[in-house]
Length: 337
Image 1 (cartoon, rainbow, N blue to C red):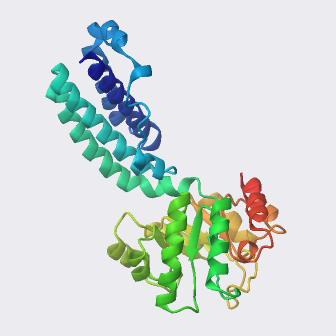
Image 2: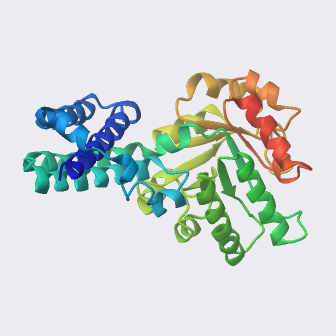
Image 3: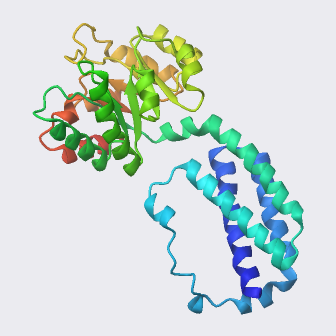
């Protein structure tokens, strides 16, 4: 029985520590962090008198459960913050229930954790987009028009993600909805496997069908507030901006990130004049939400773009048409990092 108590005390306090770090460093919530810390210390205090007895009962070498693998954890090597949060709360609650049965641990600990789980879940849902975007620096926007086959196009997207691209936007202006859905299902699988974000250009309906992480809108598309009513708070909404007024309006209306550009004239948007380095510099000084410089950014222009304040870039041809995608992605990331 002492081995059961020892194992579940360790399990509960370890889970509490993980959750405490989420509250402290991800949510920046002093009150939640303090409550979780107090529960952890309370548990340790409850078993303090039995510490030596529990420690002496520990027999990790002969524990038949040590080498039983967790198939869920193995499958999700790139686990999201949300997954870490949920799995550790369930781990905590299960351990507390065992301690309640085997050590008469008071119910107050378990009930308190049920309440904290709900509170933290609500806070994470409000904050998750900021977390998802904060370390994303290289954004690929697709264009399948110049490839000989769907397989070649999708293989290049997969290689880009595998090499380090952290956001993929499915932007296929000349393709019918059925083909976009076909591409999207494959790209959703690829991005999920490697922990990248999947964004759909323009089409809110297709973003929902494909379970995308978000949509990217243009200045002439549906407005952000209307999109939010359809998509809810959890889905990411980005928008292209071409001047300071566009950026300020987008931020006021709740955009999660901005596209800033085109920095240089690009054939991807032949009717759009370059916004130039001046607008990029303004965004670097005035925009607090994540923004991605876009527009003819390649290995010849990336240094100038970074020098003018860009920390994140979105590219199309530089990656999609690269002769060596792995090398190109690596070079971009080295400069951005």
